[in-house]
Length: 124
Image 1: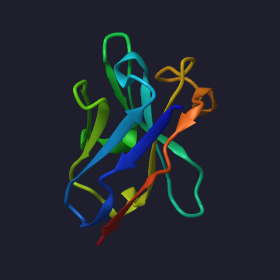
Image 2: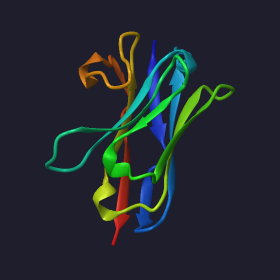
Image 3: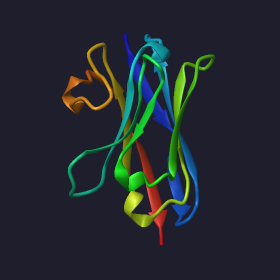
Image 4: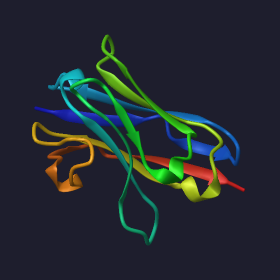
């Protein structure tokens, strides 16, 4: 059974940093494109970043403005989203997602596997 588990969220002051983790079980993440999404209260879900499975290229939404960085850890079967210079508008639940048909730049509904999400709260 495939499971994705996010962790690393929390409460941080504006300007602070967090590193979110997406750990996989029943799936070897390095063979999959992994997308990160977020959803703030009252807002639609939006894509944050994605790392490809082919050449591990990374892609970021414009609002990340160079503040976020993705990486893979093969040994731990995990993908990390390092978030720096956090802003109150980054407050949201963050999710990782993937599937065999999912690819960076593709529609989110191509992802069959989603984690439960991790809450990120940035205080001003």
